[in-house]
Image 1 (cartoon, rainbow, N blue to C red):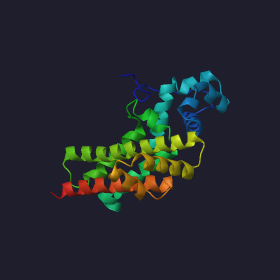
Image 2 (image 1 turned 180 degrees about the vertical axis):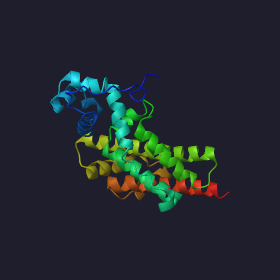
Image 3 (image 1 turned 90 degrees about the vertical axis):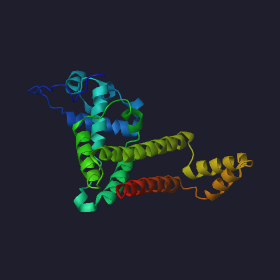
Image 4 (image 1 turned 135 degrees about the vertical axis):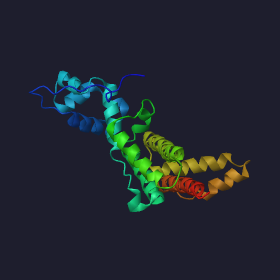
Length: 234
């Protein structure tokens, strides 16, 4: 495994250095959010910052290091309430929705987050708070790890598919309503030999993609938490 920016000793900044790592991350995040991973380059970032490449590389030696920093910055946006304030179930629900919202704000995240470990300070803080939250439910120590991992896996898996769907609509150049309407028409036309599928398509009367995706997410998260809650009560 490659050495990460988190495991390297960071040297003190040169006396005349005006650029900061925080500025770099903020500007890089703006590029990623608007242009995606393919739109980010160290050369473009340096130009946007009005900085020389030498100064940029002193703070962030490689693009991989930059992506590590950006991923960790996203983890800082996730809300994990204290169990004393919300209770573990309500807290887990809020955590799941906050995680989904963060990925939707930064739709480039699924493309890179599975390519490297997340061991930055914000990832560690998120993990710490999450383990405290799920620990309050009454799981065994090992089950705490598994319960939190199950919720994160569900949320990240579901929202990654959601990001892909939204990108597919964007690339089509059509409105969401038009895209969904045509998809339902096509699905109905090929489902004639599959009565259960045909009926399922008919039930999908809404062409509001946001509502459909949110309903799907909410149902799955609630069902997962129901299962975890039932497991605790055994």
